[in-house]
Amino acid sequence: MQNDATVGRVLLASLHQAIAEVLPARLEFYERWLAPSSPGEETLGVASFMAVLAFLHEEGDASEAVATSAGHHAAVRSFRQLPPMKRAYLSVLPRPLRAQKVVRLAVGILPALYPESRVDMTRRGATVFINIDGSPFCDARGPDGPPSCGFYTGAISTFLRLFNLRASVKVSRCRASGSKSCLLMVLPDQMRSAAGAERSLPGLAPLISPTSVPDPIVPSAAVEIGVADADAADDRPAAPPEMAPSVGALARDDRAAIEARWEAIAMPSPGPRSKRDATN
Image (tube, rainbow, N blue to C red; front, top):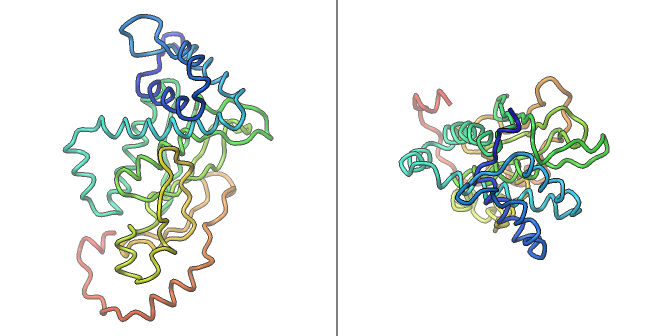
C-alpha cells in the first residue's frame, strides 16, 4: 500500500544534494521535510516526499533544475553501488552491446529509486523508448504545462555517460502536460569519443564532439550531430510506439561536410566481416 511505501536513501540524498546546489538559501527549510521521522532510519514516507516536491514546484524554474541535478546524483550513486566487477565487465564490452546492456540496467534501477513508479522499455532499431508510470516529479498541471521529466533525463544521460556512452535523451510526452505517463526517447550512443573522432576525421573532432559536458547538472543530453560507430545500427530516431512522433529528427545540417571530408581521406578497403560484425 502507498501508506507503507518509503523512499530510499539514494533518492533522498540526491535530492538533498541538488537542493543544496540550486537553492542553498532554502536548504534548511527542506531539510526539515527530508529528515527521517525516527533516528537511524534512512527512508522517508511517500507522503512526506511528495510534500517536498509540492514545495519545490512553487520554486519556479529552479524546480526543474533541482530535479535534473537530483537525477544526475542518483545515477552516480547507483553506479557506485554496482559491484566493481560488473562495472568493469560492462565498460569493456563493444559499444553497441554495452549501450544495450547499460540501458537495460538503467531501466531496472530506476523503479528502485521511487517505489510507486513503474518503468519499462521498448526498442525500435537504435531507438529506445522508456515509459514511466507514476513519476513523482511529473504531477499533472494541465495540457499546457511544461514537461518536468528532468529527473529521469538527468539520471539516464548521466548513467550512460558513466559507461562512456554519449546519449540523446528527449521527452516525447510527460504526465505534467496531461499524458497518462511519461515517455522518453533515448538514442544510447550517438557519437564516438573525442579521441576516436580525431583519429577517424582529423580536424573535425570539435564539430563532432563537444569540448565539455556540464557537471553536475546534466540536462537531457541531446546530441545534434554524430558519427556512429562502424558496427552501430541506424541512428535515426524512430517514432514512439502507438503514437505519432512528437520529437523531431536530429539535426543533420553539417552531415554533408562530414561525409565530404570522410570521402577525401584515404581509407583501406574493408576486409571480410567477422562473425561478430555480421551479427551486429
